Length: 148
Image (cartoon, rainbow, N blue to C red):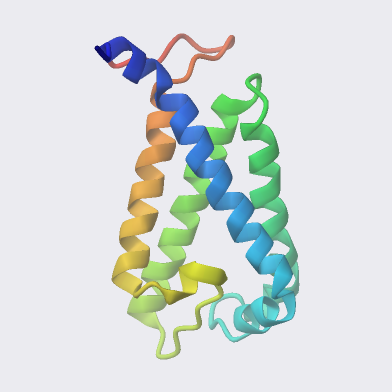
């Protein structure tokens, strides 16, 4: 029989694994089709002036978050970084959808096949996963953040 405490204790591991898969996939797809990613960012009405920096910064940041998610000492902070990055991506989508006539998609791979509604739902789910990771992770410098 599965005990409730075992499920609760495994939440950070599940959250870490899902976020690692997401960010490795996202960074890899951006680097594998880098010129297209850079062009799409250059077409963004918000990011045009920063396209070169952002095109390198985003996948590098995603891989840095993966590195921090891989080490228990830093996982608490990596969940915050994951949460922050997903909030930024979601905010960017909301701004583009509401205030731009042209909506470029700079996502790679399977993610660019999603509709904007599906993309928003996925982002909200990933934000929730990062929050669960924060809430259920223990850090030496912080008290245990358990809800139960």
